[in-house]
Image 1 (cartoon, helix red, strand yellow):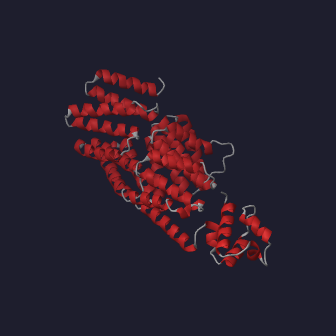
Image 2 (cartoon, rainbow, N blue to C red):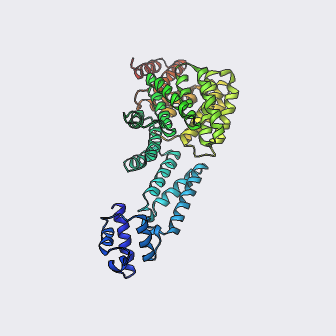
Image 3 (spheres, rainbow, N blue to C red):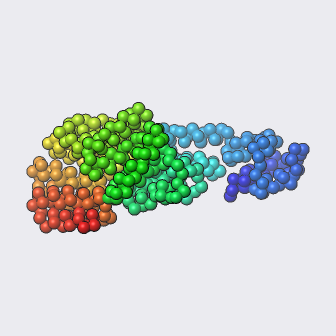
Length: 427
């Protein structure tokens, strides 16, 4: 039913409950034929007419418009606010429960915007809980509905991100390019730059380096024109990733430092913590002699992430980066502890990050002289990578696994892993 149909049905229902005819309700301001057209959904009453009818029917205007009383509307908005607050504070399970309970409320039937906001909140909470397939299902359903341009972009950002984290890179790119690759794409906004940054990370994971470099420059130019903290953070953050991936480590650190500085001033605890973790990992790769400082940065990020709406993938990624730092610092036992904590959080369908975690575990056990354990975990790397489509990220992990297998004396397995790494790059 359309909004006009629903409004007309409510007017008709209340009129009959009051024992009034259409003529009695209409007199003297309106004609009974006009009331009939409204009740049948063939006319949409103006706000002034709706207010008049609410007075005549002795009911709230909120009920005629939304199907709920003012008190019910206040309770719904309060419940939605509590659910959002729980998500922001990192109380993921409670947030997911609150969003789901609110969606089960029949009063949301006529409240399209509120219902869509609640479903989007549930999608974010579901993503944060690690149920990425379910989050994708919710987001796809939302994208099929009519919505504001801004909300459509927000849904696309989330869907592109979840596809990327699920290693479904083709779908991630398709979602981003549907909006950003269109000839009728609107002028850049903060939201579009954020979508562009998410799309850029999918290009990087997939290995589209030429497109990634070109797009990074485009996003930086857009951010400079907008001059907003939100756009600057998104563009610089991902420009750092591109620079790092193309061997320009010091340039990457410069971009990352700028993004971190702006993010520190503008709040948003979850993104600040994610940025801090990325910066720590970047510092470790570019300046390994500062591994202790990098580890301390990531330890702080881990504490901050635990107090926000960060997803389990974000939390696991932080533990994996901490494990890298401990290996560089010569503490393989601590590295194993961090990797184990990360793997306990990871959803089963996040295979690429899981493979990286297994590889670090193998190297840590090898450093401790646990040859059998090292072999077992490097074989797990192979098992996780085999089902994944070819990508730059997968190629890098295959190559690292091959090096580890060679060091463990598994020559035949190493040769096969090197072959898989080459195949992923198209060679």
